[in-house]
Amino acid sequence: MTAEVTATPDHAAGDVTVTGSGLGAGPVTVSRIGRDGRGVPVRGAVSLPIVGGALTVLDYECPLGVPVSYRVTEPDGTLTDSAPLTLATAHPILSHPGIVGARVPLRIVRDDAGADARTVLFEVIGRADPVPSAAPMGSGSGSLTVLVDSVPAADALAWILADGWPVLLRTPCGDLFRDGWLAVTRSGESAPNPGRGSRTVTLDYRRVARPADAPYATRPWRLADVDDAFATLADVDGAYATLADVDRGMPV
Image (tube, rainbow, N blue to C red; front, side, top):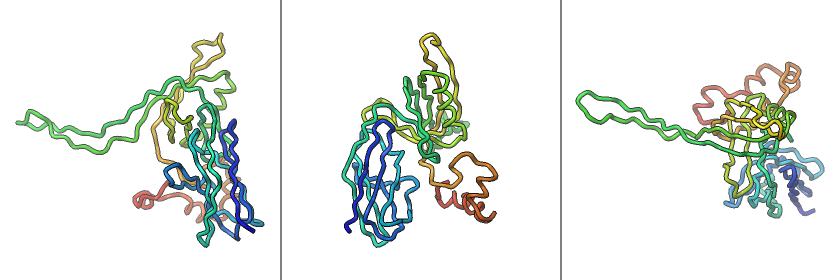
């Protein structure tokens, strides 16, 4: 049986369902291929076991308005690609990396963004000009202003931010706002036009790298969840990066 990979977009939700059939024994990895030809592993789809030659994966981080395809890589190096597609979601989406389906649509009205210069100037006696010591510019930070239609909508946005994990902002291609992973450092809320039903939420953020897959990137996180996810304390210890790991460049 010939292997086949199909990618089906859900334009309203902003997701893509990837299905495969006729695959080998596995494990396999599903990657999203961008228009530059580079692949990014779909979250939760690395070294997946295969049952009956089939798989189903939900990609809830697919960029909006950009042509992509999906590739399944088998252990023997066999590659099977889907037909290209474009996710035509009309509005920006904010989603959580560790909770499948946790996403909220956004109405962005303002994004005040910038990057911090990491330059130190040393004043030297006898010199008119200071001596600079510089490092590369920071990753960027800013403040995002969005409108929500109701208190429940504001609560949904607050819930997705509640555990402090970075969130993914996806905007339609050609929009005036930038995609990317945001670590929200503060949120504020006001209701300047309560009679018109709109509330304003301000999110202060710092741009960060895409977080790695991890068993602790889900909620709720209770003692029972620890017991379900890890067999021993050694397993818990092994799931978290150490300072030595960070020094070697491993994702946290």
